[in-house]
Image (cartoon, rainbow, N blue to C red; front, side, top):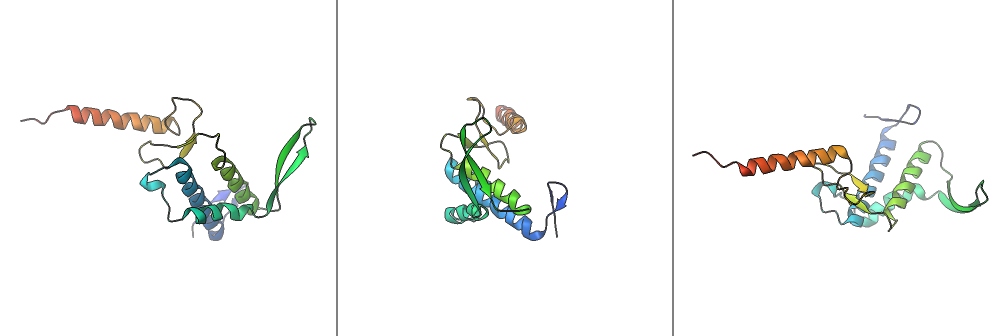
Length: 154
């Protein structure tokens, strides 16, 4: 059995890892739908409805409240009745749902070689999830250009 650690060194069991993978696959499937991502490795076996159900399941015990903040402004507060690992997975599901459901976020798939990630474009010229993918893409382009410019010897 494989395990992973999360917050404070507690070990995750197989069931918890399966729940995290299901949430990850759900988020990936909805992200592919939202961004019209056609990359082969971005696709999952989940339908869009199954993916949304995987994201909504950890949110079943949560709710939004209108509250006054310390500086006397009114804000929306997200609360959940989960404990332990369920808190972590609920928070991940909430943040993912908030990102995917916000039409103002310019969520894009990274087209770096082999990358499966998405990113929110913060700069107009940004084209990859991070500098490593940008470097990989530039190196791959350089090799393609040099390979294509060389003519075969006779």
